[in-house]
Image (spheres, rainbow, N blue to C red):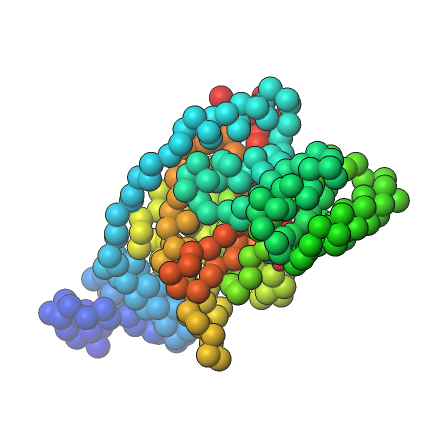
Length: 311
Ligand code: ADP
Ligand code: MG
């Protein structure tokens, strides 16, 4: 029977896999098949898994590669943000500094002002325009909302100043150092996603994308990508999460600006490839607005590598 199988397999371009229950490594039929390049498995499940892997690989080979675009960058701004942190021996960029680095690469962030004391708050808020978001800044303050150090939808000067003194009192109580405040544009009407990067010793920068908010923790619905990314790679990353339909618009919600998000992801890939001092980056969340309106990163955490690691 074995010759009939491999001779037929050789005449056609269809993949042929065999399954021999109860065979041994030296069963004559098995040896004959594998020496004629017909893989033969002991269990149908293994054969089915191999076929599925062949199918995935064929699709991967046939996929449209797309192009790697290079975006114009304001290198002066990017360099000055990094240089300043370096001279001050800081590894964590302040929120407004992180935004400046991102904007130098054309990655959109919520309009943000940093003020050192409450005296500057009202002016900053006026410049940005109410309603605003108020966030405390401190060298050890990472999960700001856990510390009740984020106030959303602040509608006027009084609420702003009350909010700031409330935050300052809470942080003082907990012994958390306060360096100042961020006053930020309040971004509404979007879907929250996360974009991030961790740097692997072997693979280099590894990008991550997923839906934001509570979903990240519960669904672990994220996808990874290695730069350089082509435009198709970025789109495939975005489309591959299970919750992608939420971005396309469900229950009558308008579709989100996925094209803009793709552009942001590509620019981020360029940023992390250019600056190997950026050790870790977390945009959590990025608010993706309805089609045509873009997206805004509203919380940016950028960690630099310590000097000894820098080249
Ligand atoms: P942290 O992650 O340190 O707790 P964030 O800056 O991410 O603090 O703020 C907490 C949450 O508040 C965000 O996940 C987002 O839902 C919301 N938020 C923060 N900034 C803005 C903003 N500028 N516009 C709208 N919503 C915001
Ligand atoms: Mg956050």
